[in-house]
Image (cartoon, rainbow, N blue to C red; front, side):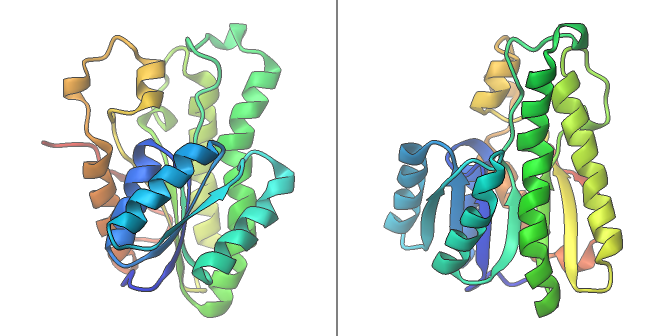
Length: 239
């Protein structure tokens, strides 16, 4: 997919991989709308992208809020046009330090699922239909190795990402003939605030910078038509 002039919606766009993706996809010519709860941080990212000569807009909102889903999608489309690329980068670990499942409150599990699974489902449901009518579009779910490996204390996050991966495959199977591509990408361990919250003891020098992974995801989106629909891609950082 040529991103020039394409409408792009990225959740979790105020920091980390989401912000790096916003910069990368805007640099590639995308008209980018970024969503996050932190309005001031979000507006700073959008302003930085515009200062570099590219197009970006802040759409403050919480993907976990059912009432916000249509407002987010509508505001984004009003700013950048029909959404051709939807990237689900917003994510939460739940309470930190991470807890054993026996110590995880039901409400905390529910909140993680709302942000990491149900919120992306709502936005995809709103956006993918119009993509299908136009005969093209790319939806990217940002996954994790925790979706496939059973790490103690990562239960809520892991369950949400495993479910998101499978939802990605089901979307692809159901919309296989419409021209809409669904992909799940495992970015590997990155130097982000979320990683630091989960693993404060980690050596940051061993972690991939988000902008490097964002460049790889941008290449995946550009070549999505050559990738199996519903695929799960492990990107990582091979330095």
